[in-house]
Amino acid sequence: AGSSVGAATDEETKFERPATNFRLLYHPRVQLESISSNAANSDGTINLLLRDVNELDQSATDQVRAIQDVSTVIANVGFRPDSSIFQELQVHQCYASEGPMKLAAALMSGSSSVDCLAQESPGKETMMNPEPSFYIVGMKSYGRSSKFLLTIGHEQVHHVMELLNEGI
Image (tube, rainbow, N blue to C red; front, side):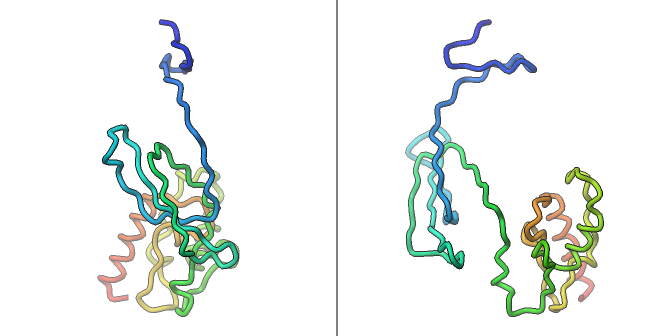
């Protein structure tokens, strides 16, 4: 079968992919306020509500923008964790990654593999902070490291539940 005009053929799978015409729009320094389905269209698009962020202190502003009929979202966030929620608590943060110190040390010492999929959860002891009964889980626990996996996040929640059941 021949390719239709504007279509691309994937040589490895012999799969014909339709051509895609899309606009790429760049929205710097915004935070995602909400995502909603586009009930007006059945084409699978969504609507976004974006809030501008102050460049100096990363605080949210009053400026909000609605973006409609979005088919694809690419988030290249250059992530830096927001630790303001626990800045008054006793949390020892790693200077390099800005993650909790025990977990960051465990991640750095076990980072001999370049394959992030080969990582294992470092254990529940690494979830503890000097602040009693305060735990940081999920992406924020990895600080600026890009190696976070959702399966590790699930294990972290399991570890925290174990700690809470133990009364620690």
